[in-house]
Length: 215
Image 1 (tube, rainbow, N blue to C red):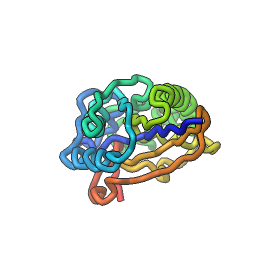
Image 2: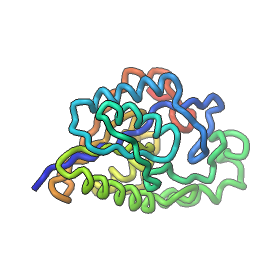
Image 3: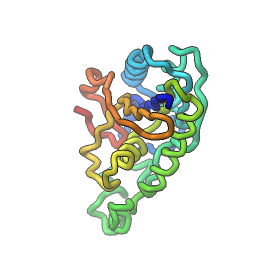
């Protein structure tokens, strides 16, 4: 059987001076440091046999995918199934104003962290991303495919692949900016999962999607 790798790349740091939970809002681009991160991950993958690069429709993912594709003489195609997860608090700053946990009007959104109640169900994210992964695997059979997407869809898909519960502590996600979560398949069967952080040295002071500092 042939061996195929599908690399799930998280986008780089985003220009987000208001530190909003930007989610699926349009127009959020990479910061200058995010552009550097994108180049680091492109350099990391330059020795891989990449035959396909697909991206979320979000601008930050498209910009992260561009240097990866360019390094292999490929075009970036878009897959709606690997877009960012939906979130009720999109466009707000967590812990402030109308997004405060202490506001009783918000309590219904926090009732069920197993689903989760504040956004797109974990299982739905896993289903759409897994379908995109298998389509990319089939299209790049015997080579490597790169999908550029977002932290939460990557993380819950990895947990599902490893047989772990989807509910988790967001502070313990292992999915840094421009990280690479690699799924290696033998034929259609997942053989192993590995992880790399080629942009780790650029993390000092970097900001994640919720405005929290990355260390």
